[in-house]
Length: 251
View 1 (cartoon, rainbow, N blue to C red):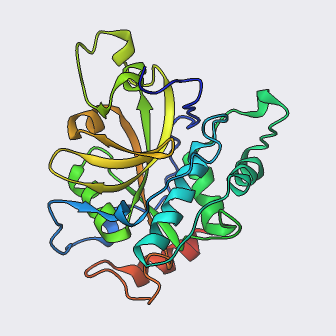
View 2: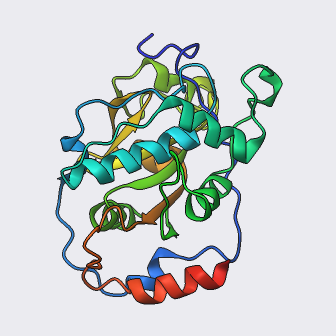
């Protein structure tokens, strides 16, 4: 088995929707040209596991990897600490490493709200987040290109543990190919090309095909952060000022 479920843990709870969640399409009426391929994560050479080999903290490991990507792309070095990631997991969910029954995973919206209001990894905050249509590859590509990464959730099939590249193989009637047969998982997308998105999970770079993504993804968010644009320059044709105002009103 390529990925051992015993040391490749999941931990994303079912997608939960809030009617107040800001939508990507609201602020991106006319996008700049989106490249056919991008690989923002190339500047980072080591992606730590951050406890996701022992606990279902993938929602916070994913957030930490995005913060790592923001730093690397701007010529800075930032290596998330496992202790900080587990502390964030505990703060949001009540997780206690000495009480296995508390390791129940995280709703991504809860993690995103904590990331925005309190900050992950010792206080690193995002300014806002917007929900992208997970079944629209154009929005996913735009989110990754404009904001350096996408924070996403998938309903992982058991068959994924045996695949070097996540792709649809065999019949969907096979129980191992059923969405969520392994559980929900959070990863961050740091690039894409014609074949599919590129994600970070379990301390490594992982590729998936677009058809696999469309079959198994169930939520996706663009995280707007001053750590990605440290000069304060907003993306072309993205209404960043209005987004900040709406995020503040959201509370």
